[in-house]
Image (tube, rainbow, N blue to C red; front, side, top):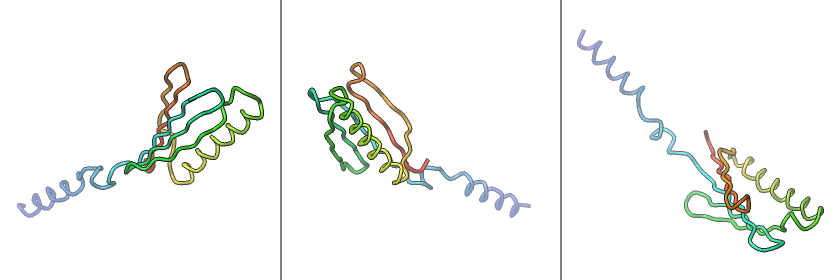
Length: 108
């Protein structure tokens, strides 16, 4: 009977190990988008480990063609993140929409 209780306790202990210890945590990318001057948008991608990537785009308020090009560039950036396994988790907008943050998470 003692062996059976001991075996049961061992199985419960093995089954209840923390999830973070099993996965190593989530991989997160933060994308900030900000209008910096008339005609330019700054996009910064911040990856785990302190790596950043910066892209400058035309502001979408100038012409229809510029808006089309900017939208295509956003699509390219987001498609690259999805191909790497990230999915959009949350968005935050500040300063009446002139500063936005998108949070992408991989593996959840």
